[in-house]
Length: 184
Ligand code: SF4
Ligand code: SF4
Image (cartoon, rainbow, N blue to C red; front, side):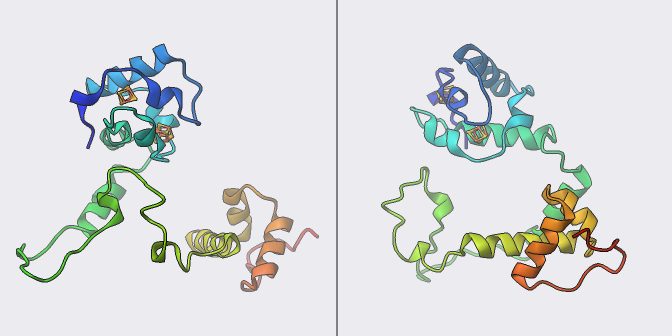
C-alpha cells in the first residue's frame, strides 16, 4: 500500500521508470496528481512492471498508488464488466476462520521489496525456459481467438508465415480450416 507520509514528491520513481521519459518536474507533478486522487498520463503509460517500488528511496511504494488509480480510472482498458466478473469469481465465500497451530503460510508477495539473495534456491527451481513460455503464450493466444491463425498473428505482431513456423517448431495443431493457405 502506498505510504503518503514517506513521499516527499521527489519524483525519483517516475524519472527512473524505463517506460516514460519524464523530467523531475513532470514526475513530481504526476505523483502529486495521483495522491490527490486525480488521473495522470502515467496511468496509461505504466506497464505495471512494479520497479518504481524499488526506485523510491523512502519506501513509499508508488506503484501501489499507480495501480490503485489505474483500477479507479480503468486506465488499463479492462472493461468494468470484466473486472466485476473477476471479482465475483474470486469472491471469498463461507466463513472466515482463524487457524491455530497449523503452521505458517508465507507468500513472496508479503515482502516489501525483492531481494534476490533471499529468494535463491527452490523458489527458482523448475522455472520454464523462454521456449516454453513462448509456446504457452502462443497456445494461450490461439485459445483466445479460437484457433484463428490470422487473428493470432495480428495479436502477436508477426506475419502468418512466422506464425506457421512457430507452430511447426512447437508441434502445435493443424492449420485453421477457416484460414487462407499458408503464404510460404
Ligand atoms: S513515491 Fe518515492 S520516489 Fe516517488 S515521488 Fe514519492 S518519495 Fe519520491
Ligand atoms: S510500475 Fe509503471 S510507473 Fe512504475 S516503473 Fe514500472 S512502468 Fe514505470
